[in-house]
Length: 379
Image 1 (cartoon, rainbow, N blue to C red):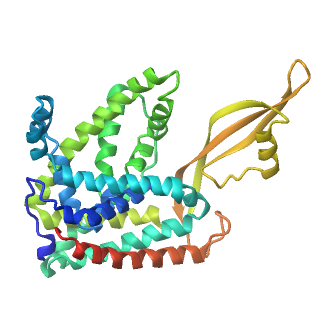
Image 2 (image 1 turned 120 degrees about the vertical axis):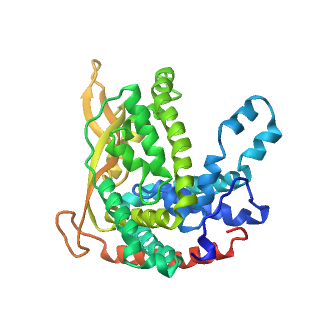
Image 3 (image 1 turned 120 degrees about the horizontal axis):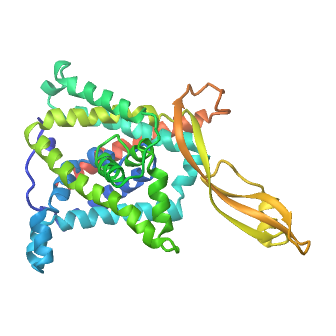
């Protein structure tokens, strides 16, 4: 196997501060991927060449580190924890989340220009498959050796095409949902948010988080505790399993992970017949002459946005004054079916050019990521 991707144990944090701009940039790429449903931060970690270091950094949060923290042995705690790597990586992730929610609203563009955004990630993931395969030894690229690749692709495809089903909200089911979802978040090609959709707990988790700060804060925290516990347990156990596999079966494990990327292309394909579910998040009663009512009435509603306001009802109160019910509606992607870029039905007009430009942009971005992998001081 090429020296760039040889498996080696990383039992201590070997991060150098010279890596800061590279790790922050890689974290930025991970954060941007986490915003898009169907794409995981683990995908970007694998593409940018820090996947194994990420797994070992997560694994460094063990019983020894926690014990040192609770016994106030701070220096020992930082000796165990890969804190420099995690600090720089999460700095990039947080910057990406702020940038793509406040400056460039990526979640909005996913609804208004889905072909362009999904095309970008489709080209990025497709190009990364060839990038990663090229770094394997020639013996690992023979047909017989590629069986793990096909197995990973089959598993990835099966996961992303599962149909969500009704599920309970018991402690243990929410706990398991958190454990499985967090595992998916660090697996390339499998989105943690999509796993929550399959387990029918995506809205449940968002609702509990949204209730924090309201009069229902106490109950919301109690409801989210099983999910948080499951996420912690799942992350700790799964990171150890992955590190064990990477230590002993690196090439096979890498091929399976690349297979996951291939399997995810089904839901990342930019041309889809997408089905959305609308949910009323809140409602407010205002006088008919209120400026917000006038603004909504004049502008009309744009159902292509992930969240919009609409006039739901008009009525008169006992005094004869006209009142209006304003609803805040959010849209959630519940299913999608790939289409030909020249197929006008049933999705309506598809932006063929935007999808093609997105794919080309993603493939070009891989060239920059390949340079980033080679330029990093500690790769």
